[in-house]
Image (tube, rainbow, N blue to C red; front, side):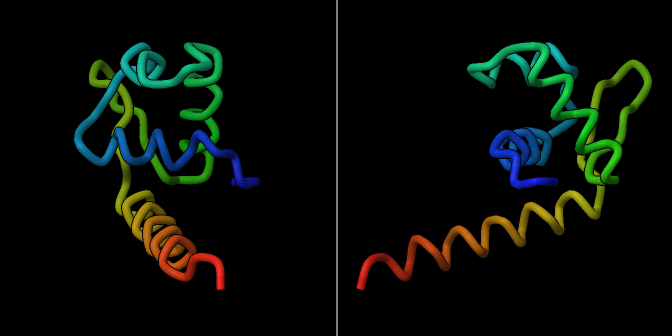
Amino acid sequence: MGGEPLCPVVLTLLASGPRRTHEVARALPSGYPSARATLERLRSAGLVRERPGAGFAITRRGRSELALQRMLHALVVGSGPN
């Protein structure tokens, strides 16, 4: 994924239900072009799938990736400065 910061945001949004590109774009400060590029990057990695007429939905692999990202975030935040 290249560490792109929008991916966890978009995966979190899609974890609550399928979304169309314009719905994802409203949640991102960078707008539609960034939303489209992020969704395409996630789709090509197999983390989301495009559902005709229903937008994008997170896959089982995407949920696993999101769980890993959340766990790593919790570990980093939990460790804090020593």
